[in-house]
Image 1 (cartoon, rainbow, N blue to C red):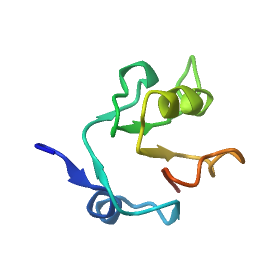
Image 2: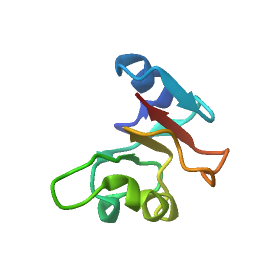
Image 3: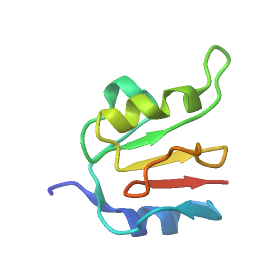
Length: 87
């Protein structure tokens, strides 16, 4: 994948002490909008003034997110074949 970064390499660069799921694979892009997630992408779930990105995790996964970065632990139904990192 051209322009992709390995999940393990990305996780090593982030100050995220907790990781759930596999650390292998690659991420092809990063976005905080679940509507912009493409297969193999990374969705960053943040709390904003108007919306909480954690509400859109299921949508990001349905669009093919390989990695989700959040502020809270993963939801109980988070798939084991995807990666979730949080602080």
